[in-house]
Length: 438
Image (tube, rainbow, N blue to C red; front, side):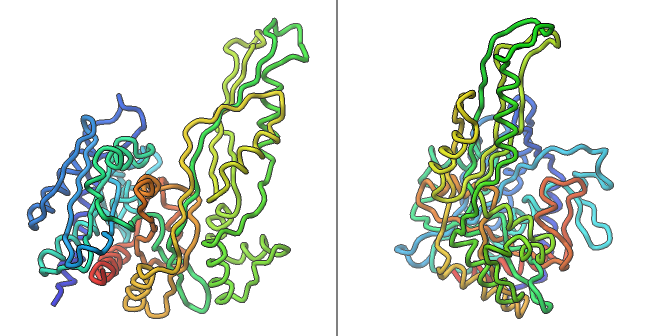
């Protein structure tokens, strides 16, 4: 008989301990300490204490990763990767009501950097992995537990490095489960939907460069690089790309539309989305490609017209839309600027009608009768994009039952990041049930 009370207790304790390890990832190597390695060692010690053989990989000083495998009974079955990242984004402590690395509990909420992104799932996976060994569970297929560094800066020293240099750690893996999804959202009549990300937007960067004739500021010229650049940036910033109904988006509309009595037709799409409350911004961002100007650089002295001006763009790309976005962006920017394409990670798209999603629904049926697992397209990006290069189909599902007005996605990277403690207990139980079904 599974000791669910012990499972819940360990999960919450592990999450709090991990939050107390400052593993901030600034994205700048010189300013990153050893927090990811200390967090990985913490995980490794508790996995080995439960009887796991672990692989600890420090891809560079301070950037620790750890992977362990629970072998299944069917050697022909594809393995399932369960992964979480151990790094967190920076904090401005003055913006926090409670210390960001103290893991304090107030009024039923656990506060701390990583409470939802994503030391919560790291702690849950660690507790569930230990429970599986404690109970002597032999799953049908291998379960690979992976704890990565550097997700917040693109996974260069975490998932991407391991996929390129240690693909053996993911041998025979066909599916993966991680962020961002699993949290409950209200869908009407006191019923909750549990979002599962079956697809993720791609992430790309581009740089616009305008050139002109340098000169003195007192003698304006029509050949001004700054003006050319700002014309292009303004056009891009105002542009709305066309709606694309991907399979994940359409399935979301089908399920939620049925529950809420909404058609989500082209004519009333914006109005119907507004009916979803805080969920509307999440789904709205999944409907279109986006190009967001983020950095402008030009000149260095007020009285000098610079010869060159640049702008950097953050691009989020729907599945199958890489070329379409490039062509449209070139058209909008016009002939007066050059576009240089930077890093480009294409979108991921996993099948919707698969047994794994049935397992997610079964766990929800037990823990929240009437809850519905709802596919959607994540407008952001996770380490699943790196695993996809090995043919591993990624899903985002970290189960959390939260109050209807609590916006879990809104807690990502926020000051006073927090999560209900009851939701963490729910997460441990639901994750246990999902992995017991494998």
